[in-house]
Structure formats: structure tokens, C-alpha cells
Image (tube, rainbow, N blue to C red; front, side, top):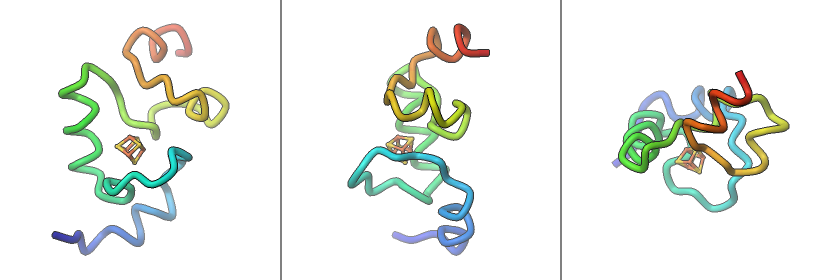
Length: 63
Ligand code: SF4
């Protein structure tokens, strides 16, 4: 499965987690993190994103 928007999505994706197959596939990324009670990388500033803490608690603390 691929997404016609993947290349454009990748240009705007700030996720630095290596090797994730969902990168650029925003619907899969959001679903994955939502099911884990988390938020995707793009909702965090770069400095926080690179900690890989995608928790709602970290989002609230950051924002
Ligand atoms: S935020 Fe999570 S699911 Fe999305 S690309 Fe990064 S590691 Fe993958």
C-alpha cells in the first residue's frame, strides 16, 4: 500500500525515529499513535520530538 501524498508528506514530516514504515503515511501514523494513547511527531516541536516521547502528557506539558 502506498499513498499518492507520501512524498509531499515526507517534506513536512519532522519525525526522526529511524526505520518507521509509517513515515509519510499520515493516516497510518495517526492511527498507530492514537491506538497507543499518543500523538504523532508533527504535533511536537523538534526538540521534544527527538525524545520520542509521544504521550498526551508530554504534549500538554510542552504546549
Ligand atoms: S510519528 Fe511514529 S508512526 Fe509517525 S512516522 Fe514517526 S515513528 Fe512513525
